[in-house]
Image 1: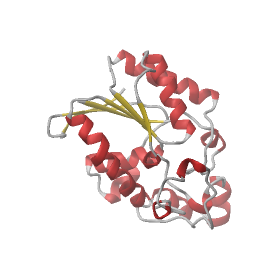
Image 2: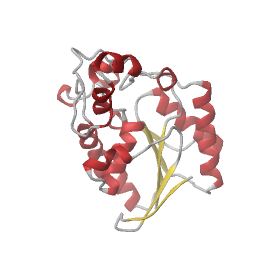
Image 3: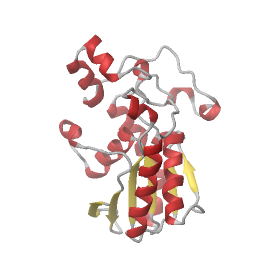
Image 4: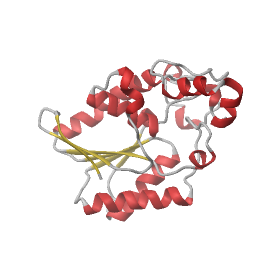
Length: 222
């Protein structure tokens, strides 16, 4: 069974270098092209998916659509889940990373970005639309550490992804830099102190192959 992890293509926030978190921003023209190229790579690898999972943010949703269109697999059922959202960066959302370095120092910004348990300054309140209305308010943080993001992803793996893989289904999972890092950490049991070595470029398909016990038997970058 195969599962491909894919970070969305370049977003407007990536281009302008600000923290995005759960802010819903669009892909750039380059990001759209990257998503189509990712689809072409997966097509050339002969991948056929049974189900697709994305976050509820349009940069991931659109990436999945561009990729699937390139593969001729737009018809595949897509599940959109908040659990694949980017890490919630609290009060840092919308702030330029370089400007924050000038204010707080490069070391503090690095800690906010890469430390495993560091929680960013919390948002005073979340101003989200109705896509989150169905959630227990206790599930919606005002700011997350990477550790919290990992814990948010585990139920998705246990309740949805793993059971489908056991049924010998191939899955495409489209998320964000930190949600893909979080799932990578969980799948590969990466130590906390090595988390900053996990690099997830935009729109680069990462293919895992599992045996019947869901042990990873192969990993490749397409």
